[in-house]
Image (cartoon, rainbow, N blue to C red):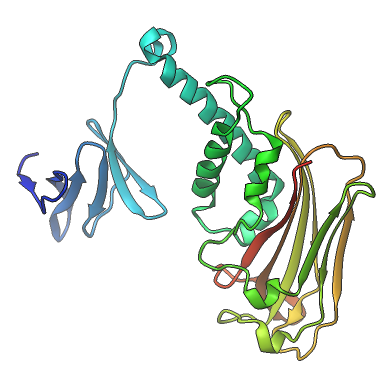
Length: 289
């Protein structure tokens, strides 16, 4: 492993290490790997690797095949050495944020599998870490997610590639009434043929509402999912629809999400589309209590 080259110096210095590996595949003798600094790498070439070679770990991400170096500080030293007290505090708060991410994904598991893009976990992780760090009650290292911080979730898109269309969002009226325990989403009359943009292969769409009670202290949840009947994408008129559910007596944060996904109906049976093009869901109402 050599051939160190300096490419495009700018405000900082960026080094790329070109590594040639004997792949021993008929017709191919070498593959190329470009490593940026000591920590970040993107694999380029006809052959992509996963696994470990020496101190290099090859793995697949949503953005392609990558590689990183193994190693780091000794685990026992990080846990006990006074020099790493700040690291331990950061790790504790990171773990708390990841518990919140796990709870959120579990509460919205239906929509995560049908609508959410591959980067939803990364976006949630970043958001929950920021919200945990906003805790102005507990000491550093013991900070928790405070209920009043959940207002940041209103407007959250589950699919970054496809937002809930403004035309459809304008038809939706969400409400949370804690006194009665009623959570509802009212959808006004509309013309699917005029405002719904469908992906190739779709014949029908389904409107979905998810209501959830989230307890970030005990890390428990209570969620309800409501779906419309499959609606033809070329229907000229769709009557007003209401999605109502009840979570009575709650003192925990309550949230409402509304979205749309597409299916293909053949002989009366709905088949989900493999891609999530045009599928969307948005957090439309949050009551942090």
